[in-house]
Image (cartoon, rainbow, N blue to C red):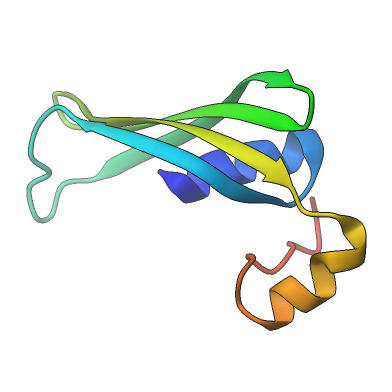
Length: 93
């Protein structure tokens, strides 16, 4: 769910760091179930990008998440990616 929100934020504000994430679990995910994960940007407030994500499987929602994401300063991107602190930025955004 964090990655789904991260990719949604990437499309809106570029690479980000997760500042806060909350997950609410609704039911179990059974082994072998096919899942669908969706992330979206809800809104932006200054530098903060508010996102949500949902994990669904047969029969409905497994979990929902909300998160706050902060843009990675461009001057810090290479250092943070190299240190493994930020996802590598996809070549095709």
